[in-house]
Length: 246
Ligand SMILES: Nc1ncnc2c1ncn2[C@@H]1O[C@H](COP(=O)(O)OP(=O)(O)OP(=O)(O)O)[C@@H](O)[C@H]1O
Image (cartoon, rainbow, N blue to C red):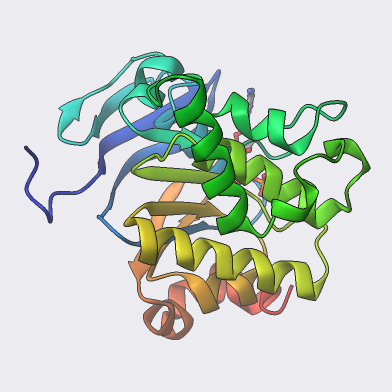
């Protein structure tokens, strides 16, 4: 059993090179139970690379990755997702021609049980995300904001302990952003699930995250609460000074 306060994920010296370019350099950070952690940084800072490293899609050039206390360095995406770390993709993960119900059902393939249990899980997930009225609709016909929620629903239907979201707010209007942030808070508060949020919408990150990790040129620049990050001179110089309010 893991101690209640043991980090869900820890990286030690995580490094990824692409030829001569060091996309992520010697990165140490952790994700704690029941927290929404923002991962931010200017374009090219190394956020997506970090995201791909921790979900097993990229192998690190150096360094180690621990998931729930186990060394998972070099493990496959499937092995990592079966340990309870589930991710979404920047451009959505849904099957456009399938119903919302069948999309969410895809997220229950592993570890949920048989038919009735899976259907129950779909209903509970849809309720949680406000998708119940759309269960029979073809996913590709829904407004953009609802499609994003379906993608989150597919990932969350597996009831991960850590849900990793890659720019889930891109292209959403203000109402859709607010709605999605409420969903993320409920996922944390009601299910005790931690969330890793890679996101450019700074206002949203500042409002929803418990802690924020800032990358710059592949290097760790700062970690802190939103208040600490806002006041951090290095962050302001490197990033917020140019992009705050984006
Ligand atoms: N597959 C790859 N091959 C070569 N270089 C890559 C690859 N993926 C990323 N890079 C480079 O690594 C650096 C970090 O890129 P990454 O996509 O991780 O940054 P990011 O912070 O996610 O940027 P953005 O906010 O623009 O999505 C960039 O210089 C990028 O060009």
